[in-house]
Length: 173
Image (tube, rainbow, N blue to C red; front, side, top):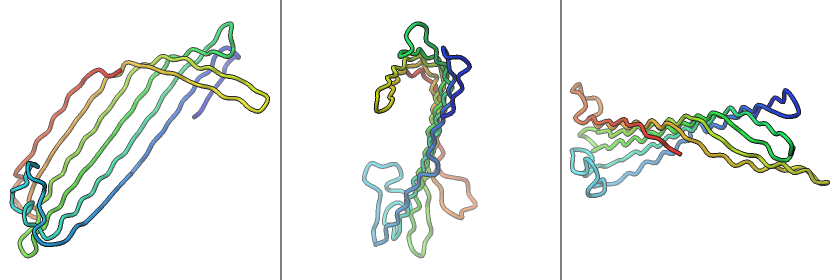
């Protein structure tokens, strides 16, 4: 959080929060491993009867805000107007191997981008033992969501046997 106070009546704040490369991996070995019934590709080649399944999940969050605060008669209450950007990027990869035959992969990618304006109010109180503040915000944001799925045989010269993707935009509040 960076702040700049040009006068006693107003202030600018720039904040950033990020969680990069949050990752979880797990490998299961044994005979006859399969995806749950009803799952996409549950009965396709190496996704049924596999000897090894390797799962990798990766997630990243980016959150940035630029806000302007001001007050008039009451220094304990400040009004706020600003801009916010939020991104959630997730990746799920499944590698299924049948020993001695081959491997198949199923990859899912999702990205959620949210950007827009926000309004709010901050209450600040000074006490003999310290200072605290509470900020409430609300906003209207454009939300762009993208999802892609790909499934393929690893090492195969043929193109992926399944590719699907969707992109949509919506308002979020």
